Image (cartoon, rainbow, N blue to C red; front, side, top):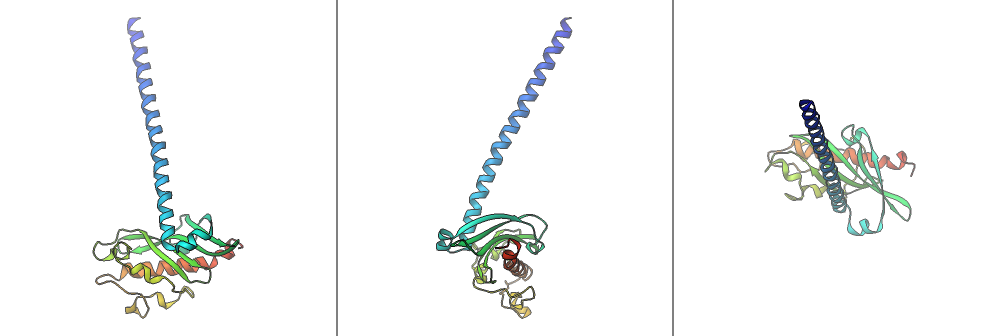
Length: 202
């Protein structure tokens, strides 16, 4: 009888500590997830402020959507902000992907008017070679700012080829795949932005 009681007590204690440990893990995970999401949200606002002028950010209304489209580089859902002035949709900001970077996918943020004129572009993340391919970062060089005010006509627009291929895009010393990959993604993304009024009946 004594052995049976000890077994019951031990089983209860083990179950209690297992439950307590599991509950603690779930509680900490929920707190951590909230903090991560909060940080990501703050980062998004920083990036959005970087691709459009301050006066535009402060005076235009922004409406957020999640969108899936093959022009954005993969099959995932991407963040889209439509910008309104006096209740009329004027432009959009979209997160997209260059899937064919030298070292993998390159995430970018593109802002453009619906007529195809680019407002701003920033690279959000990449794994390109330090010292060569990382010149796509605004913290390394101003290369990414060269897209501002360029206009995308269609998906065959040759302006978005590197100069060595007859286009207007500067390449880097020792790197052509990375800048061409970003330029192609910018062109596709802006072409997508031109279709936003039709997609959302704006």
